[in-house]
Length: 576
Image (cartoon, rainbow, N blue to C red):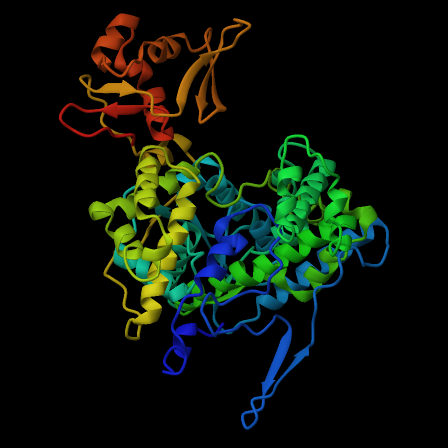
C-alpha cells in the first residue's frame, strides 16, 4: 500500500488531518452503527483508490475514469447446495489460497495465535519444508489462553513456535510510539499494531532470510467470528436481532430528531418509521453487517497489516482474503447462515480431521482481549502517563487538537485508567494519535523513519506449558507492605445478596463483576468487609485472624483488576 507521506513531498498537497471525518468515523469513536462511508486516508485532499478498481487519470485534461473489476457479492446470493458441499468447497478454496500464499523464493513464517484462523493456515501450509511460527506472549495472551493454544497448535502441526515475550516492563517510549503512528499513518494505531510490528522485527532479526509472513487475519469478518460476541450471550436469533438494532441506529443517523421517541427503554414508535431509504438493510441486516465488515477490512486490517510488515522488510499474506474465500462466505444462502456462520462453524467443519478436536472447537479469544486485557491496557496507560503525561500533553495541547479535545478531561480519564485500566484507553489513544498525526503532517519528520534504540524482544523457550512458571513473566504486583492502607476506588462497592444465601458481589460502575462465596472464601470476604480506607493491612489482618500469605494472591489480583487501591504512607495511591 503506498504511503501518504510520499505524497506530502509535493508542496501543492495540503498536509492537514480531516478532523471531522476522523472523529465521526465509527472505527474511531466506537459507536454502535454500521459505517457505510468509503474508506478514508484521514487527510484532506487525498483519496483512496476503491478496492477492486483501476483508476485512470488523463494528465492533460485531468479526466478520471474508474474501472471496477471486482465487487463484494451480494450477501445471500450464493448457489443453494447441500451443507456438506458448501463446507467441502470452502475447505478446497481455503487450502488452495494457503498453498498459493506459500509460493516464495524466500523464507516464509506465520503469525500463530491460539485461534482457529491461524491454526487453519498452519494446517494447510504443510508444503513449506520449514515454517517458523511466532506468537505474542503478553499478560493478555497468557491469561486468555491464546499463548498456550498457539503452543499446542504448533506442536500438532510439527512447526517450531517462538513465544515472543512482552512483559509488564515493556512499555513503548513516546518517541517509539510516534514513529509507529507515523509509519502506519492512521489514528487506529493501537496495542495490536505495536505487538505485530515487534513480532515482525523479532522474526526478521532472528531469521534474516524470512521475507514473507502468513496471517490468519480477515477470517472473523466473513466466517461469523463475531456472532457470539454480538449475540451477547444469546444465540443466532439474538445475533440477528442485535444486528437489526444496529441497523436502526444507523438509519437514525439520518433522522436524529426521531431519537426521543425511539431511544427509550420502551420505544413509542415502530422502527418502520426509519425504513425509508433503508429497506434492504431492514429486510436483511446481515447483508449490511457483511458490507460493514468489508469496510473494516479495507480501513483497518489491510492498512495496518501491510505497514507493520513492510516497515520490517516483510510481505504480509492473509489467505482468508483470497477473493474465492470471501465470495463463498459472503454469498452463503440465507437458509444455511445459522448453521455455517454461527461461531465460524463453516471453518470448524472444514478442519474436521485436519486438526485435533480440542483445537478446532476452541472458543474464540481475540488476540490479547478477554480476561487478561487489563494487562495490555495498563501497559499503554503507563506509556501515556510517563514523564508527567508527556505524550498526552504533546499530542493534545497544540495544533487543531487544542481546539477540539478537552485536555483536562483527557488527563482525568488517564488518571482513572491508571487506577483501573479499561476500554476507554483505546479512545484516549485514538485522540492522541490524531494529535500526533496532525502535527507530523504539518511538519513531516525527515525520511527515512529512524527508530530510537531499543532491545529486541526476547523469546521464552517453552517445552511443556507450565502455567505457574510462565505466570511469573507477567507478574505486575505492587509491594504489599503491612503499613499500607487498602481502599475501594470510586465506583466499586461490596454488596450482599438480598436472599442471604452467602453470596456477596463486587460491583464495578453498577455492574456485578465478581462473586464471593461466604463459605468458600470466608477469609477473603472478612478482609473486604473490614476495608474502610483508614486501617492498614496489619490492623485488618490481625482483626480477621489471617496471615498476609493466606490472602496475598487474592489481594494482588484485586489490585491488578483495579477493584482495590493501596495507599503507601508518604506516597500516592497505587493500584498496580
